[in-house]
Amino acid sequence: MIPLPDGTFRYSPRDLVAYLEGDFAAWCERLDAEGLRPDESDGADDLRWATPDGADAEAELAAKKGDEHEQRWLQGLRGRVAGLVEVARNDPEGQALTAAAMTEFAPVIYQAHLAAGDWHGFPDFLYLCAGNGCPCGGRHYTPWDTKLARSAKPHFLVQLCAYADMLEAARGYRPDKIVFVFGGGEERAYPTRQFFYYYRQLRRSFARFQLGWNAATVPDPGLDRGWGRWEAAAERRLDEADHLSRVAGISRGQVRHLAENGVPTLTALAGVNGKARPREISSAVYDRLCAQARLQLASRGREQPLWEHRPTNPDNPRRGLALLPPRSPGDVFFDLEGFPYADRGLEYLFGVVTVDDVVPEFRDWWAHDDAGERAAFEGFIDWLMERRGHWPDLHVYHYGAYEESVIKRLMGKYATRETEVDELLRQGVLVDLLPVVKQGFVIGTPSYSLKHVEHLYMPPRAGAVLSAGGSVVEYQRWIDSGQPREWQESPILAAIRDYNQVDCESLFGLRSWLLDRQRESGIEYMSDPLRDETPPEPSPERIAAEQLAARLVERGAARLETGTEAEREVGRVDQLVGWLVQYHRREEKPMWWRKFARHEMTVEERYDDRDCLADLTRTDRPAWKIKQSTG
Image (tube, rainbow, N blue to C red):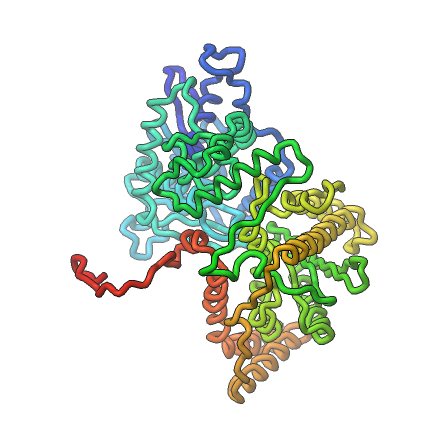
C-alpha cells in the first residue's frame, strides 16, 4: 500500500491478501501506510503495540527458498526462451517497458509492472498465449507465479486473479487461466472464471473497508483467520484483552456466539457456571469450553498446569483413555523430522525410543536425499517388523497425525513395504496419543501440542533446537555449512538429533503418565473390533500379481542403475508396468484409511471434515418431498 500526494493510496495484491486473512491485518497495513507512529497518535488509542513482526529465522528461510525457486525457473527460461524480457522491480520506467514488451509480443516477461486504476502489481512471469484456438488469437498474456507450496492456496488464487484483472484493463482481454509453478517444478493451470468473481467480491469488500477505516477503531484479531506480518501485535492484543480465542480448542464461530451472549473474555467464560449458553453451541461443547477456560485461568503462573478427566460418554465409551493399549516391553515411541524445502519434501530423520531395560534407548535413521529417504523408511519398517516378531503386542506411539500420514505417503511414493504397512494399520499398531489426551482430559494449557502438554510430567526443555520450525532452519544451516553427513561429525545434525530424542522420550513420559491415570480411573483399554478382524488370506491371483510387480520393479531398477541407454529405457517400462499391476489396489488404500480414521473422530471433528455427514440420528419418520428431492 503506497500513499499518494492526493491522500489516496495505491494498492497491491498483497494488501488484498492481508484483508483475506482478516480485518486486523488489513487495519495494521493501512496504519503503517498512513505513517502513524505512537508519538504521533491523536490520543484516541495507544498504538505502541502496532508494529510489524521483526526478523524471524523461519520466515527468512521461507522467503529465501521462495526466491531461489523463482530464480531457478528464471534461469531455465534464459536458456530456452529467445526474446525473454526482464524488468527490474525498482525501475521507474518499468510500466512503460512492460507495455512496450507486450506491444512487441515478447514471449515471456519477468517482473512485469502492471497497473489499473488504484492497483498495481508485479507478477513473477507473463507468458504470451500460444493461440491454439484461444479467442485472444495468441496476442495476450497469462500470469504465472512460482510458489514453493505443492498445491494452490486461496491467497495464491486471489493474487493471480488480481494480475488477470490488471491485464484485462491493459489489454482488453481477461486471461482464460492462471498458472503456478509449484515446488519441484510442477506447472498447474487453473481456470480464471472459477475464482474471478469471488476475487471481485473480495475487492469490493476491501474497498468498503478502506473507506470506513479509522485509526481509533481497532478490529478484533480473535475473529480472523490469520494476521500476516502482524502476528506478534495480534498476540499481544489478545493477551492483554484476555480474549476468548485464548481458550484451547475454541472456534471463531464459538467466540462470536459467546461474545454476543455477554461472555467476552476467558475469565468471564471460566466463571459462568453453565449459564449464558448460546443456542448455537451444544451443552456438551459448552461444558467443555467452560472447563477449559476455568483450568487455564487457574493454571496461570504455575509451572505444572492443572488438569481433570473429561466426563465419559456411555453411548461411545471407546474414547480417551479407553484408546490406550496395555504396556508391552516392545513398545516404540516414534517421531519424525522433515525438510519441506526439498524438491519433493524430505523426511530426513526417523527417531525412536525403546525401553527394553527400563532406561530409554534412542535409535535413528537418517536421509539426505530420495535414495536415503527410501532406505531410511525401509530400514525403519524392517526393524519394526523384526521387533514385532519378538513382541507381537507392541505398539508404536506418536503424537498427531503426521507420523502415520508420512508412513502411508512414503509407502506410496516408493511403492515399497506395502504389505508390512497394511499389517501395521489393519492391526492398530500405530497409536496416536493426541486423541487420548484431548478426549480424556481437560488441561489448563493454551494448546494441546506436545510442547505444552509435557509440562505435566517433565521439566522445561533446553537445547539448541526447541521446535519443529527451528529444526527446519537448523537443517538448512547444515546444508549451507558443508559439515559431514554423519551426525557424529556434525554439531548441527547432533543438535537436531538431540531435539528428536527429547521428543521421543517425551512421548514415553506421556504414555507413562497416561497409564498411571488409566489405572487410577479404572478405565480399561477397548480395542477397535473393526481393526481386530483377521485379514482374509490373499488369493493365488493376488499373490502372483504382487510377485510379478515386485520382479518388474526390481528388474527395472537394476537396468536403470547399470544398463545402457536402451536397457535403461526398457527398465523404465519394466518399472511402469510393475507399478500399473498394483495400481487399483494401491488407489483403494486411501479410501479405507479415511474410513477407519473417521471411526476415531469425535462428532466435532466429523463436522469439520467436508466429506462427512456428522451427528445424524435414525428416525422412523418416512421420507418426504422437498422440492424436487426426497428427504
